[in-house]
Image (tube, rainbow, N blue to C red; front, side, top):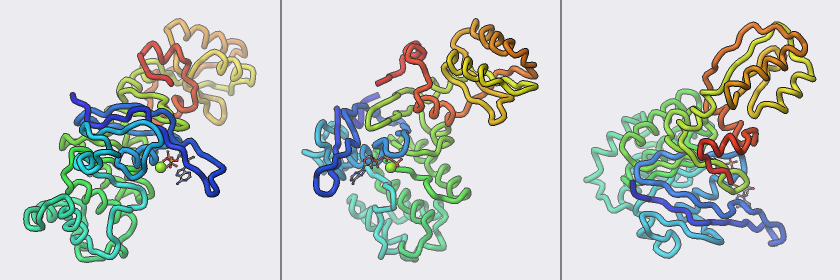
Length: 329
Ligand SMILES: Nc1ncnc2c1ncn2[C@@H]1O[C@H](COP(=O)(O)OP(=O)(O)OP(=O)(O)O)[C@@H](O)[C@H]1O
Ligand SMILES: [Mg+2]
């Protein structure tokens, strides 16, 4: 697969008012996105995701490093680079509030060099697919947030660009609209486009993304396939149910011995990731210390949310990560 988007050691420092206080939002960040990839850009609040997306689509300039889109430098060859990407940013800034739904679609298609006539049927299809028929002639200003979000995604799809960047596309949507937007994202992914999604919505990542780049404090923490990360945790995850709560001493020992585990609030059950088969005996030894009765011991399935939290909280030991060729910065 050929590379479509390339970030080469980009950094961005924001200067607060007065220029004294500085925030390093992104530091020496590098990764590549191949054509057709669906990548989840993840990380805690303030990790630098929005800043990174804005640098990829040329809205802010990196202080250092380069972004190439389709081999064009986003700063020096901006127009050519922008031909390949469209973006849906937070706050629906890419819509005109004083134009209607249909006018927005026509306007932005025109911006991309399509005549209103040539995109008419595509616009009708999108309005129907996004269930905006009853709002076709409504000003964007009068649409609900969820409807604006759907329209912003429709505008990005209509642009017909090879890559679509979405910053938190399901943020603040009700259950039904969130579901609809997820379905739309799936449709975009199936069209073979290149998609970068920044999100805190872990089911979206588990469902849609092939790969994830997790950033933390502006640096790459993990860059790997979602399926490999899931497998790494899944094959080794066990849930243990007990007839009485663990003692404080047992909890301390478990924490000191095992890389990844979570406890139920009442300490009568926990999940643990075992790094090798023999570790189960060590686990049993710790339970034996208080003669804690074991009610059940099961292999457990794991959600990407747990994987993400464990990666970000740094509970995964380095050697465990190296075994499976993860990138740890
Ligand atoms: N315009 C700005 N001026 C000053 N600091 C900023 C500005 N925009 C972002 N920052 C800071 O840069 C850092 C990265 O912010 P960014 O918005 O990229 O994070 P994020 O990963 O998108 O977070 P979230 O998950 O909350 O959306 C944060 O510390 C933030 O406070
Ligand atoms: Mg953000």
